[in-house]
Image (cartoon, rainbow, N blue to C red):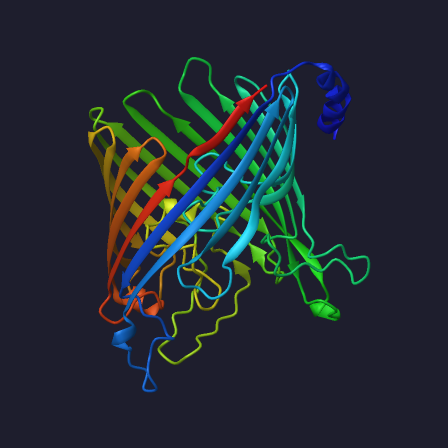
Length: 438
């Protein structure tokens, strides 16, 4: 609150200053197509429970359009972004919403305050990210206060969500535009002078709505809180880089189950030449004990005393755990998770400035030992190519193949032959259509 008071005190002074005004209008049009072969789930079967092979292939085209208006002058910056996304041929109008709408006040001493709907991105986006691969992407309705200097950055993020302006009817929050009722986040980052080393600390307190609207006793509406605390460290000299992170989760979920989960990751990259680079890394996300792997047609219910499966909450999951999004985008049938071990190696080659080629191999296994079945989930290969046609037009395409195991099949993540193939392409057109200063 002291930071907010200082900003408000400085408003009069800033208003008296003659600053340069700038107005920009930007357009982003994203066309995206996908092809899937394999990966049947329990719904794609006939009355005898046999896979329906004619449904074992899918094609579709999607689009996302954004129109952004940015205004800034000394001490003030605003942005509003309208967004539409949908599938070609979809009945209705698709998904139209305001993706961003915020105002930011800044002071010369580095203090700032930003309020409204914002796309948040912190560190490597593992915990909080834009998730821009998804057509709708992520944004948050928050008040963000902080300080940014040459070496130190501190951000405080505050959110409180509600369905309507409830004068009556209580404060129950469900099926809103945000996944949480309340969220409080403190992020601190330090850049070491003269050394390409940066370190961040993050603390989150997330309130999730439990119970049901109008319920009594154990079903009475109640906000329960879970906490996440951790660090991210990156060292990036000219020819190589290293990144590590560690996070713990605690508190209670919306069903009042105690949370005891953690994750760790490490990544090393080396630049062999301006055109060639290599990477290798390992992610470990803890899993729930006694994870149920039911036989076909059985429920396999197990009572859990605590949640030990780590949840990377609001991160850009597509970036980390394989491009086919089997993990932490979809959920398991019973709501719990066996966790994940993800070992990967990859390379990048750029024969010309406009063209980039990438390949990455993932070995994936559960973090929790499973009864009577192996921990290995499968082997995944992702190939991606991108070509910069012009400064504001980019064409990308990719193909992924996963050889799953019997474990993958029993976890309802693949069909009986365990061969999953997925291809995609995207065309991104993002021109600045108007800009003026006065």
